[in-house]
Length: 271
Image 1: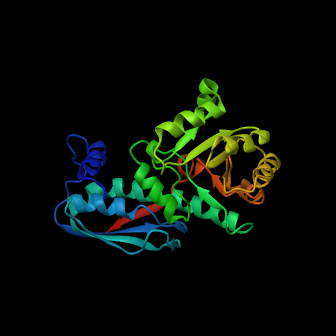
Image 2: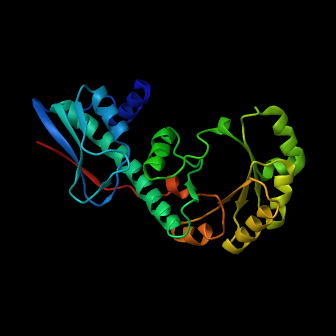
């Protein structure tokens, strides 16, 4: 659930100190309408904005639904002043989230053409203050949230290895982490994949490798005959997904799902 303080911050940013533009009398209704096809997300946030303003909001679609051009996804009713005050914030949130969901769905569908099992995951490359909205949008598109925050998993990255060595870093964090916390180790050379697994990695992140290098690293992990997961990441685009899905990885993580998704174009219409 979104706290009122978050919604207040969103509205304060848009309304400023003296909003004259929306001083409109009477009651009205409104509709959030798609101007292009896509995957719906962000309606929980949009509804929270209107409900904070005592405007009745009713979803006409659910997260993950496909919407076509002209389709209505949200209906509202209430004082015209409050409907108009909430309009832009709600449209921005739903448009951004639906853009994330739409891009995620394209990536998932591209992966499914090759492998039904490989997961498409987001990263922590989210917009400050909007991580919850963006991560929910990834789920609406059929993707996996990956870590919601730093507490969900330990990731041993290049800087950790530079400071403590690969094995030293894994040992260090294994002592600090709960038995229930997984440890992921980032590598950039296929030959280091079994080394990371031997050190105790639950997941090996194959970072910035070509599909051929990724396939080589996966093969080296599979030769060990254990259940260490392989994750590919690093500048992977939707167009690249089939090539990486064919390598045998378990997970393809993509920062672009959240930081570079186009906004789905919505229009808000009153009356």
